[in-house]
Each structure stands twice: as C-alpha cells, then as structure tokens.
Amino acid sequence: MRTDSSSGTLPAREHLPAGDAGTPVLDVVIPVYNEEKDLEPCVRRLHDHLKRTFPYAFRITVADNASTDATPAVAARLEAEIPEVSHFRLEQKGRGRALRTVWSASEAPILAYMDVDLSTDLNALLPLVAPLISGHSDLAIGSRLARSSRVVRGPKREFISRAYNLILRGSLQARFSDAQCGFKAIRRDVAQVLLPLVEDTGWFFDTEMLVLAERAGLRIHEVPVDWVDDPDSTVHIVKTATEDLKGVWRVGKALASGSLSLDRLARPFGDDPRDRDIQDVPKGLARQLVGFCVVGGLSTLFYLLLYSVFRQFSGSQVANALALLVSAVANTAANRRLTFGVRGRGGAVRHQAQGLVVFGIGLALTSGSLAALSAASSDPAHSTELAVLIAANLAATVLRFLLFRAWVFPDRRDAADDRPSTVVASHTPAPAPTYATSPAPAHATHPAPTYATGPAPSYATGSATPYATDPAPTWATGTDASRATGTDSPRATGTHSTYAAGPAPAYPAAQAPRYAPVRPHDSTEPGDER
Image 1 (cartoon, rainbow, N blue to C red):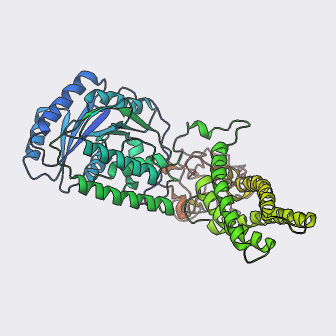
Image 2: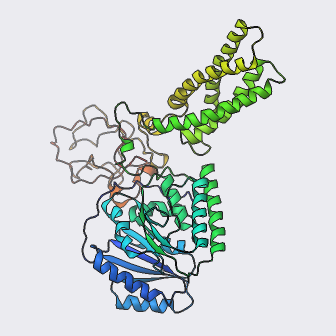
Image 3: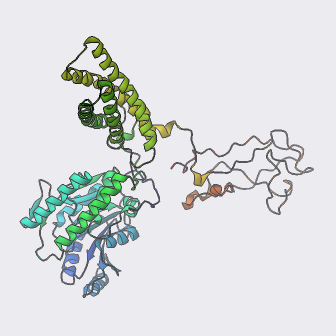
C-alpha cells in the first residue's frame, strides 16, 4: 500500500459558489475501451440531460483506455462538435488508472464518473452531486442495493453483487451498500489527498477508494438509483471477481497490520461535531465502552477456560496467575486495536508493559478473593471458585477500563493538546540571535551593535554596515515569506526567513535604540501544525 503521499489538511466543507459560465463545476468522466458504438449516443444523451437540468457549468471528459477500434476518432469528433466535451487518451488499460489520471488533472471542484452504457438513470445525477456542492458530503455513490432502488438484472449478476458486498462488510467492515455501481462522485479537494493512497488501477479502484475514505472518517452519501442491466456488457465477471478478491485481501492485510496510515485523513475537517469540547461528554466514551465490554466478555470466557485447564495440574493460585497472564496479553492487544483504535506496531511494547501493570492489579484482586475464600472454607467447590473469580473480575474490569482510557491509551488528540508546542524535525529553526540588552553605541560614530551570541551578520558587503549610511534590515513580525508559495520556509535549513517589510526608521545619531531580547520562533505560529 502506498504511504508516501504528502499529508494535507482538507478545508472545511462549504457550499460551492456559482462560478463563471466558462468554469466547470462538474467534470463527468466516462472511461471507455473499444466503445465505438455506444460512445456517441451516451455522450449526446448525457450532454442533453445536463444542459436541461444541471444549474452549473459542466464538462464531459471521455477517458479512452488504449482503445484499438474507432473510439478515439469518435471521441475526437464529439470534442470538436460539442464545446462541453473533451477527450483524454491513455496508452494503458485500467478504469482506475483512467479515473486517477483525469481526476488528478481536472480543475472542477466536483468530479464524477459513470459507465458508458448509462445503465443508471440520469435523473439520479443531480441528487448524486448536490450533497458535494452543498458541502454536506465528501463522496457520493449510486446504490442498486438500497431499499428504494429499482433494478432490472439477471439472478447471476444480482447474486454476485450481493455476495461481493457481503464479503466487504465481513472482511473490511464496510458500511456502504454498493461498491461496484458505476455511478460515483467526489469533491476535488478530497480526491487530491485520497487518490495517492489508492493503489489499484482496475475495477477494484472504486472499492479501495471507498474503504479508505470510510476508514478515514469521510462522509459518503448514497443515492438510490434506477438501474437496468446491459446484456452486452464486456465486463469479464470471473476475472473481475478474482481481481476484486485479491484487492480485498491486500487492503485488509494493510489495514490490519497498520502499514497504511490514515492519520493524514482522519478527521480532516474542522467542523466535525465529535471534535467539539462539550462539558460532561467525554470523547468517544460510548463507543469505547461497547468495544471494551465485547473484548472483556470474550477475554473473561478465555480466562475461565484457561483457569479450568491449568487447575487440572496446579493449585488455584498458580492456575489463576497463569490464566490471567495469558488472557491479559490478549486483552491488551484486542483493546489496543478494537476499542481504542491504535494501529501499527508503534508503542506496542510499551502498551503491553502498561497492560501488565494493570494485570498485576487484577491479579491482586482475584488472588485476594481466592485467599479470602480459602480462609472461609477449607475445600471450596469449583463452582464457588468460579463465582468468586467472576465477581472479582467484574471489579477488576471496571478498574482496567479506567486505567486503559486514562493511562495506557489516552486520547491522542488530548495528549497532543497537553504537550508543549514543538516543531517537526524538518522545520526545526536555528535559535534566533539574542540582542544585548545594554544600550548600543551611537550608529554614526561606532560600529554596529554586537549580538549576545557573536558578531552581527554581514548584510551587503560582508561586514557590519553602519546604520547611518545604509538602512538597517527590518525585523517584522509577520509569517514566513515562503508560506504563500506552499513550500517550507528557509528555517528548515538553520536560518530564518528574510522579512523585508521596508526600510528601517532613521535613528538619531546621539542615541542608539535599545534592542529587546528576541526569543526563538514560537513553534505554534500558523502553518507549523502537522
């Protein structure tokens, strides 16, 4: 999986303004391969529909996937006859490759695609893109499996489609209903950050994009569609299904191992109500409680099973310690991944060590309970031992959750807010020179004032220039000059940006200014957050 995409913070969702007539708001891509017969009727029908019903400027882009028939000639003729139609030629096959290429190059704020057979009724196009235009959603998909959808297709295609979506729900925990419908749209600002993470270039491209978007917390809008199966479809069902299953395995493995980091996309917008600080409402508490209870119930069964096994050849205290130790390691690993959402191997050893401390507290509670039972009865029944252990484990479970939430797996956003502000390694500035606090000598009769950390830097000729003859550099308080270009400021190389805000004020010759001590750059200035 690709993890080298540069991170980016997406802007808050906003309603797109009605732009100039020549600026397309919507770019509908039609990926084709050897579709010389269906291409022209499809494009003309789509163009007529958009002209009549779409209130914004639009463009239709034909993405030719290395066709070997007359498709390129048909696309070129349509481009010449219809101003809103453009043609893009790729020399390699792959629907995903075509969409990634055209979407990455498009300047339209809303990007969509549909299959050339137009199996989906075009009346669903405006409802598809409307939530993206309004800023309500990030992606939108047409769904043939929604309750209000009206679909006409054979039982074989129906079975394959439903079986595939069941596989996605079971293996990748996907919550969207239809991954394969060729009728989707995405906001361009979302696509710019999401597409570099999508590896597939074929039919699995849609599914991978949706899974990553959902895991990253993006909002996916589903539109029920009317859909009529195309009996002349050139899609090879068996080959496509095989490639899709391989993609499911690859993405599932990457997500399970943590090799695909979605931190750059998680909660990308600043208007998520779950990110608001609301008094007496802890963040994520309900979800964590449910996950912890599920993991705790399974861990308790596992613990009791182990205790019963170890009790066959050891005493109650030894069996309890061994069973609790093994189940505690499994419990910490499961809670780390499922309850508190920590992915990857980073910090796993430290989390297990902290979990063992929590295990020690649980061991003290359960062992103390067994000791009290032994003191009360010389030969307690096995069922009595289990009942005592269950009660002790309930108390230990409550304590374990509190320690896990507050100490072992604290909220990473809260922890980041509590840490002192720091700058990432690639943006570490060199310490700013501290000026002497004693009065500086007059500029007209003495050399430039010395700095606390060494001689003053040369400005124009390599030596200190008297301020009486040349204006001194102005130390402004603005942000780095290179911020506007989108590149890192020169502070990364150990020097500060040049702040040229104009000539310095003239100083009287009889009195030199006092230079206040200057601190190094505060690491929390705008643009330094990562």
